[in-house]
Image (tube, rainbow, N blue to C red; front, side, top):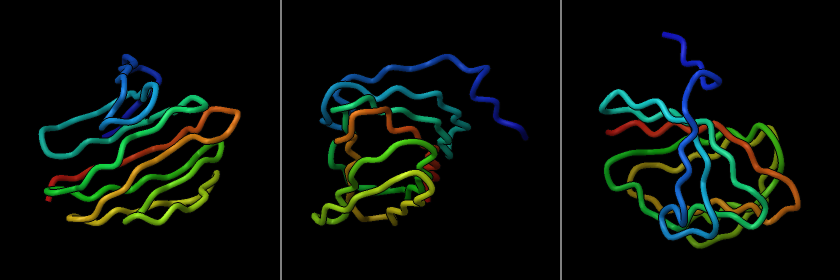
Length: 109
């Protein structure tokens, strides 16, 4: 299967998971797995949330920001791969002056 994000509609999610501003994403969902190409504009964030029935892998493709992983804040940038196992919590924040772009995969487990 080929997933072509450039052929998908853009979804804008305000205050996603309680975050700031909005999360812009193109999303594929097959009923169990969600695969996304996302953007956080400067000052935007995905709020702190726990993956109760899934894990999440995020690959940063452009920009920089911060990850809060189990309460610890860490800087992230282009080329970083972030992993949140099932049962763990995290947040992604664009605290830079340019867009933070990434791919994310969230499989139900």
